Length: 393
Image (spheres, helix red, strand yellow):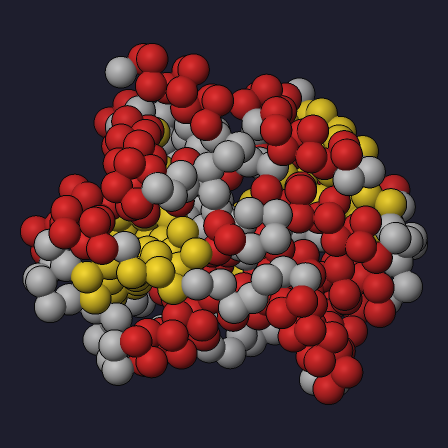
């Protein structure tokens, strides 16, 4: 799906001060040049294959299939180097930063997987690295904090606001503005100003391309549905993109319902959001009664964001998406269920997608083929889930 000057229908664009807007317009031009270069694409494919461990498996989950009554495949992004889909994007943007001659990368992170992936690629290319992370997320995701530090990154705590992903991006952008000449801002999801939603989508679309190729070989057919969790939207956009034009394939975007839709403590941006601006982009956002952006909530740090991909906002608007949701409790139950059925511990974020299928199993027939994008592994979540969430049940 083509964009028009960084817009996806009415969504997208650059809503930032002129000096930063000009930097991003220059970045967009450089990216458009580079992505057409055979050398850049060759380097990218080699890094995917020899460093990120692609293609990732499309795994037939036989016991889960029996449980829900249809054939279920898991796209095993959890098997990638660093344990999540995030490496796909940082390999691409890291390569871009290298070609631009940058000496440092700056990133934000929620659950820590993007931070770990960014620290990893910074180490690979010999760059300095600052990763901004919310104070609450640092406490909940200690293993990833330790990994970033071991990799040589400086982890910068953010305590302003709620100390979550929204606030972290605010502070990270401020840090980037101070070092814009030497640093590259490596945004982790399909959010923010142009060209980031397009770039991140381009680097993540390999997920859907592999699903298509593997499924055609294994089943000789398109999937009935692809299910993915949605925070900012990078893993969902990556999984969906190849199939947007294939109307027979249901694209299910599962958002965090947190404590429940009626509690007000959730992250149902596609489900309840209004058009607004956040972090330099026009998209769907969560607003309070005064029209101001309000805080989101999810026990899964990577889904705790009050905005969403402008491309997903457009797809929601034109009716291409099926919207789903899962509460913290449902996600924890799915986290445990998949672990005990398949011996695969998912990221708490990914468990939201599993939860959707578990509670909507009756909508799929035995002959249907459903793909869940398992966006990451749950090593980072085990302590938090076991000590804090399971004990509350």
